[in-house]
Image 1: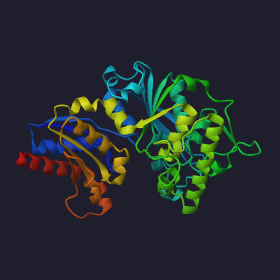
Image 2: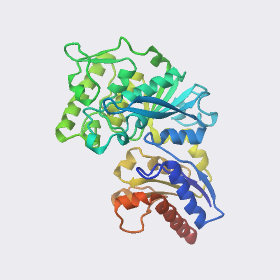
Image 3: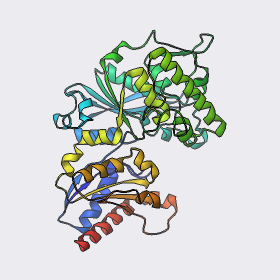
Image 4: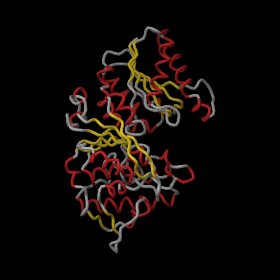
Length: 396
């Protein structure tokens, strides 16, 4: 069998690279003669830099930047390709058309600077957290000469509409008295004007692409505050405050920058950072899974394969809003290759949404507490893959 293994991370347990290796071990135990092609994936969230660096040989660089909490400092990794994206990844698809070949490129993962994983559970508060560090990473990439920047925006701890990121790039947000507001979601309701006097002029020279793992709009019942605010620690009252604040920000962006982001697909990703990158940096939002598939050359690896294996920790309704397994199985279907989504948790109704030639497989062999399942994720994934491949070989 020729098997392409292209999982995302198993959040809190395995990186995409670790998951791919665990699946490979299981496949080889079942079929020692199998030809295995590893292609660890991401969708813009945690692991994006690692996935791109693994596929392209990008240099990993580190920058000390502000964390999501006030006064916090973190060391964040980002990817650097001085000669731009490899030629093999820059032709054919609609997403490829957005990339400029040969231009010095950076891959920035906002989760590295402004991620939820950086904030202890008891300190999670999107009224205080900000994306300032993400803006500092972008500035570091521009300082390094990058004129094409891919920003992965999954896994954030913030709901600030990208205003923190914009501050690091020279924008100022003022209240009705002309006073500069503090970073964080709490200030959004008080924005009266946006000062662009010190905006970094180099932003106009950069091709910005946003790799988003969801397609939620900025505002409304499916927007940044109401869907993602509670995940980041917001109380019901804070959710409504953030919704009003993002609405106010959207209004100012329309009036002062002539950009309409309120209903734009993906503008609500990362607490509205999607909207902020469009408005403040002129970015274009695209599917993170699709962009990573382009950068890793996934379609070429899938063509002619017998089977595609992908996976994530929890396979649920959010998967179809832009997560990696949806993108990978879509490419497999386009090439007529059967695909299986492997997960530690499979939501029953989600499996019913799968198309022809795609199946789901739960790697836990029976009832198991979540902490135990996460601790044993690697061995469960290896054993589950072995069982699956043995079953498929028997059926053949």
